[in-house]
Image (tube, rainbow, N blue to C red; front, top):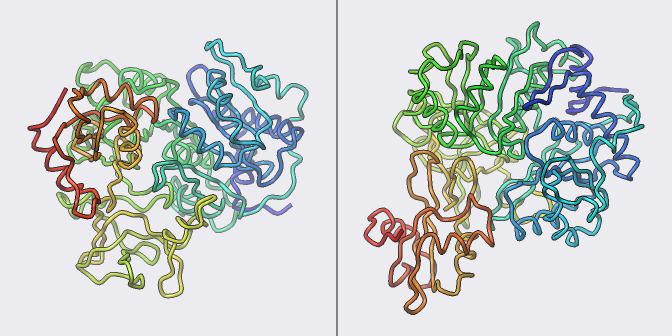
Length: 542
């Protein structure tokens, strides 16, 4: 059978090249390339036995674990589509994604059984459940879930699947315009080149030009890379794929939260070479641990610390340089919709979020209502855009797809939503989201969704939500509210109520109580004025 730019095809060729090399480490879990291959084959056969077929969607509702990547590979092997489910979601959000994603199967941690039981009626085609054991005590029998290891008993570990395609889908769910998750539909070939470097991150010849070249890109020695974000996020998921398709070793953080001391313990133990973080939210606890524990660890194995997906401030980059004088620090731009958009060249320090080089695939395009989209002139602002290897759209959302993928000069371009300016030297300075989207520690938070949750509180009359600066997370969710009648609002009180409707990371961290929430005469929200109130601090309530 012909080989394609399909992640399963590519992984299999790499696994054949270095079968005994360490592929994956997560706490006490370890797997070589051959072991990961064999276990993925067994799981793939079980899924097929349950009726999962090409194009079907399989949920991955898991904490970091080897089973996550085994599940991913098993899906790709049978041309099914893994769906990342954010384990922080509460009922409303889970209801939405289980309904929107059209899942037929779900691989989940045992402790999530009650959550699935609450929402599975919204997914009538969801029939197959496989659980990874934990000490939660939850009863998986209530949803008819089969234990993960049991599902593979008696299954073949042979690679006897049909031919795959460049166009098989990799769907990554991320925040949408309503605040609910949206599934970005990536063909395998497009995501391989746009987000995974086309097999060229660790080789001087760069990206491959034929699928069967992938094994030749495998180095003589494995680079040990650690992705600190949860696998449910694209930043970690894609980094893990980059490592696996290069024959390197992936180290995952088994902790449910990021504790700096624990991370450095793992880095020392596993002799990690490269660490991937998501902005300042991860940089701060790592740096704090180093400062509090001088000379505690031997971190001489580290040669790269890279960030993507959130603001990685120059001060935090400099702090890493002080701790690691000979380490390469990188700051990349990108998103779930775009893959990697390049690295900050540092040419415009102090302006925007950073600066990258313009190319035939990277540009700035106008997005003015009533006008045709066009490339901006030098010195003009517009929207950061990508062409070439791009997604085909959002799953079950043609309206959002039409707004995001536009045609300019007969070529499709993906509008990323980040405002940018084309400089006189043909570089691009990126300034961030033109909308009101809040990026807190790499998590996308939409004000309208938080406002709806706040308004469910009978003591709140009106509200707006804005982003205010936060040293660790870049931005914090801040609520400007007006009470109903004589209600006495407290931050802890509104937090407790809001947690019933939205995930914890979306809950306001700061509260300002005013007589009237600022709005335009039309009734539309006046976000700039609300931000002024929040930054002034005169109405802050604890």
